[in-house]
Image (cartoon, rainbow over all chains, first blue to last red; front, side, top):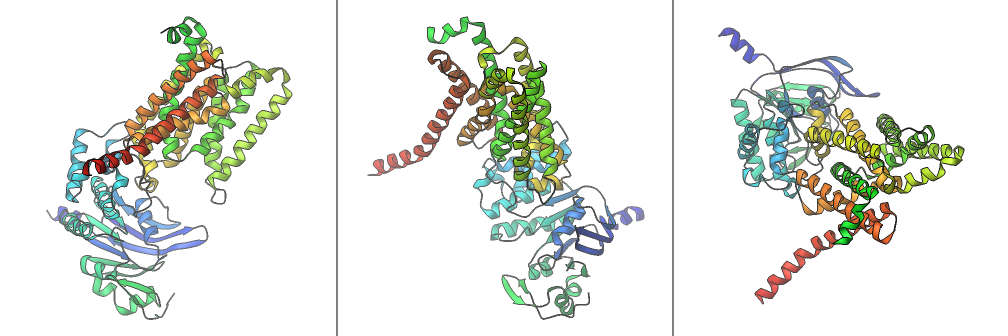
Length: 254
Length: 282
């Protein structure tokens, strides 16, 4: 039992001194993080802070120039809205099914079992009634819910959601909140990148404040201490709920 | 009925019909990806790039299909490799390579004066001289291209819809792009003899674009596109036979006519329905 508890508590992902660069530009510098199991982790920071870079590093799409990335098991992903070819002749169900493709494997088609799982995932985000609709005919919020269902279909221990709530409507936000709670109950780890500090402070177990490096990482109250915020955002507009405020100038230590 | 059956007395017409059916099917199915992924320019480039391969094949007396295939796949590889450099966009890489390959073909033709007639046939299509060997090669190529497309359809559609997600799911996106370009090259090669180098692009684009107007499902679009390609091919071939006009041009113009007929019907249908509603309400 002790061993099982130990495994459950062991982090699903570990980064040690990870540096990622695009050519000469260093996007992430010396990042060290443990992502524990069963936690919702908010990834915050100004534009260009390296949030998407960190997600892509965890996915293995970007290789660090230095440092070590260890991830246990498969990683699920929900990309930002707007990057897909929405005019593609695919139904909502087809898109949800894409999450199963790696499991289904090469040269095979998704089985009836996978189709049932996809319908189930769509039901979890309140989209089962629109399963047969062409994906481009949905509203922005509905598309976000389908992308979330597709990420659920990946059945991963670690889920990475890139700006899942930007521009989301009320129904989408509600489906999203409920799904997050359920994923945590299932012992999964969810990393959410967001611009909304108030939402992340309210809903996340841990926050990682980025600004090219880790400014702070811990429970929201610690991670969002005024001095830390000023370090990360100094003099920039930040989002708190729907409101934008001006962060005070910080003492840039770097 | 003799309008339909008379041409079939001739061996060359029976072969031509089989060849045009193969062309319609393989171009129709792969054309869906050309249309959905906006690959018309790269498709055009590949059709021109295979030209030197054809010239060399004619010169050394080997199969033109083989010559086109080797050069086409080499060009697809070159385009994909060069466009990985961030300072050279894919459009630019295509522009450089396809012009260079076509120029190479032109230079080769000019040194081989005696072959100019054969080469002209390839530029404009010479469907009435399809040999039994050509037919076997075209059939084999079609089977390979269709099988590969069916087996990789879910990966191709994922990459086409959401490249970012395909990368995140750790698919070898670059390799799969190359495979798709290779399959499009196969479709071009099958169509070369029937339609001719210059007009092949129309068979890759027009039936698929027509099918897209009629359906929102990928599999349906692929099936419809193949059927529309075959229909245009067969009708065009009969027109070519009875009116004695170039087969490639007749097929492409038939396909274009179908596109516009469908386009107008799809545009007008909702308006007519609305007017009926108003009339009933009034």
